[in-house]
Image (tube, rainbow, N blue to C red; front, side):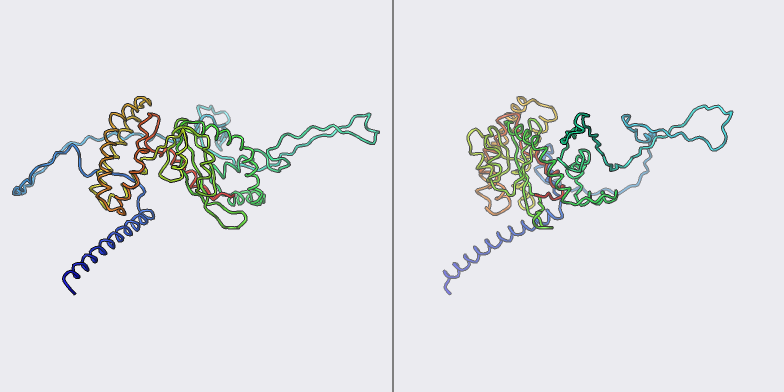
Length: 437
């Protein structure tokens, strides 16, 4: 083999080695993220190693010879802190009814004078009890109709029931809904609780009650939807939820709750869809006008192309990719994390000082805009000098196409830097039992 052939083979081997190392790094990154998801901390906290206020020495300080150790006795006077008395038992609320029980001494108190009394309060509970509410309606006829063949009786009408001809009263229906959707008590556990009262209620009956009550609440849902969608600023995201399929016993499929949060009014709308396609949000946001803040999911990009919609991306999602790259490229990722930290510090000042939207708008233009301009230049430079499939390369590749949307929150002081306000609602969804569709 000639020298030129050896150089060519060596060049090919070096190229293959670089490709394999890149793949190994990429796979190692995926394994690390999976381990973090399963066993690690979910918190994305960043603490800079260096203090900005700490000056750096331009030279190495020579170590001095260690002096000979000498022993000395140190005494001090410690002030003994006075023990704070225990606050005592928890104060019971005054709105609760009080049932008094007087306990007299066992010995005969005839002729004795009462000089006082000791009062001990105890919080007690009367368990909820099922009972039968029986409606009895006397039926009457007029005397002149008594001898006729067609007797028309007089009887009072039944009150309006939540479920027509249903056996469940409004109090029981309300408790079933609260147990399921507020206290997250599954249907099968409710059934077991009813069994302790000697009542057997099939799961199909309970599910039917929930469906009927949901139909009664539908006008409220429609009013909430109209109210939320009329806001000029929405934060939207989606989260998966396991859905029980009543046609296949014990089987579930993945559905999605789409969350539409209005930060201005602090109202939230949940919209269930069978999938994650753009059909659901496209239909719901058909007439929406204003600011729409989302993550980088392409469905939102399609919706935001509509007229009269200004698209905002979430800065927390942009930061997340950089945070994941921190263990693999501390220098580049650390710089970006430091910049994100400064941006959020500005938001914290505005929040703690209770700034008005106008004041927050001016603060961002003065403090945040220069940081964002500097950061955009750094991202362009980093994108050119980083491997596309490296963690920092992926993080920058996520931010660059969305940079204009990421900084759109500067346009109005009422806008948020991210859509984290919608995230607490995910917790509500994810701790629910699988729903039945």
